[in-house]
Length: 200
Image (cartoon, rainbow, N blue to C red; front, side):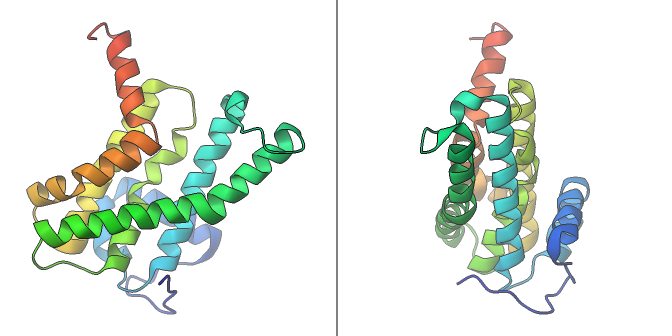
């Protein structure tokens, strides 16, 4: 269940200012943020954060590549609005929770003493912070953002679940590949960069 704890440990601020502050802090001071800003049983702020990142990514994608707007109804503007609503209300929350479910199963195998499911949801949501820029049509930028997001996931798993960096890398490899490599296009960006460099 998604819950909203009234006074979570870490004292996270609610609303747009809280989202903006969390975004800056997780990018600049990830270790401190994950250590102090993830509260047990308090998924809602993380869920909101993840949805904001997904919507911002989609807006960027549609703005720079209008051909990516699905043909739904009433022309491009209405179709884009419907798609953004679907991302905010269905696609982003479902993707976040499915990724968290997979991550939880892997953590059960890889980490003996760990935090709960709600902490895992928050870690994944906040780790996606750099992906706000991946809608911009630049393969190097997308690659950097998705790699940084994967690194943030490792830091978050390590700090929140009290494990080693090595175990966090192992535990986060598959979810990071699926979310940041596939959903946010990190793998395609890497292939584009390698082709441009003449490596493949």
